[in-house]
Image (cartoon, rainbow, N blue to C red; front, side, top):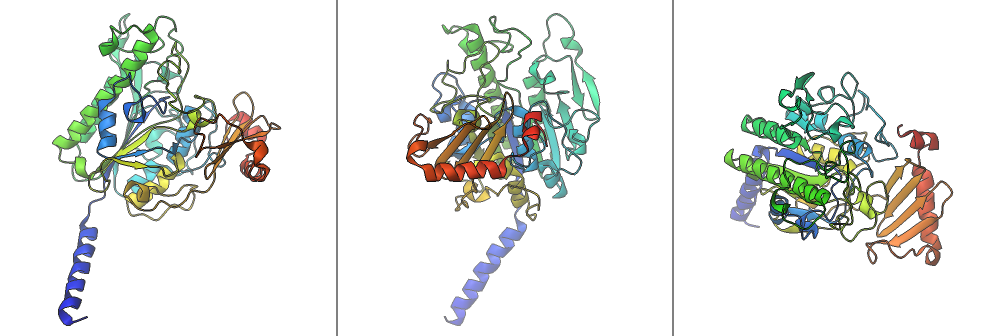
Length: 447
């Protein structure tokens, strides 16, 4: 190579190094829905419920087809997402468990350690007021949301937590409340974005849509609380289903507002926006998960460890790094988010995490093959599942047989092929026994 060529190579290397050094870390917005099924939004096949803004995220970003929640119900799933721990090691394994401890590292703490401003609005399942797991004790600078899991069932609350205090919603104290929780959380999120300066931020927006209010009734549609059934009013559907669809479309409209705000601020190109659901669809509050085929091609719903209970919609948009219109079959899980946060912010991977960064999958690189995934759930008795390559094993009951499915050929888990593959069954049985926490912990719902 002659001198001119050498100088050219060095100049190019210097340009790349300078660009990398000058690059700003991305803002991160993670919107989490509650009990939204794999098939409940348009980009995953929904035909009747309109979700144009989430579908736009997928068109302008990436859609994951094999993304997994941390659990089949809310709190333990969110525990995996926030602490980077798989179900074997996660602090919480049921909705009744809690709180996480001061020693449990959270994603919010990873971002704040990297100099980010952090905010959480909506539902938090990992510690109530005064506990070690309270949001402002676990890395969030700003927090506005519900008191507890049960409190979060109410879409017209009369009081919400605001930082370390409470905010009374006087307009909701009468017989006709008017302040809708989804709108309140959107308003705070928009204010947070509008007030952002040069400091990067992590915004975690946890809507309760479309979780049911099981205390509000079923047949009238009150279990699916909305200000209006909106564009679905004239549909020949049961009222709970009109309301269910309106809840989802309302949340989608809120996401559109967030994206418009980011664009106005000139932040949208270097903001990673993620949308996902915390577990599979419910059959509560008068809603039937079969009505809109909420699980899509998958078997099962919330509280199942079949795919419909744990495989979730997961889309991401980041114009500076993600190729628009991408689809990824990479297997990722909620407990990967903590390692991903460290990767995004240039920090070392935390020593205590079960996850791997999915930044390569986001940005078109080669995603490392995931170690076998394991889930355990103790509500009503032991349930276990293992995903190993395309093999999926499910066990119901401590001494129940291992059901075996080939997800590559049978995404709906209709054909149990255990008898034809005893070697695979034996390996999955071993993984279940190795990963299974003590049974008393599983049934109690916490570590």
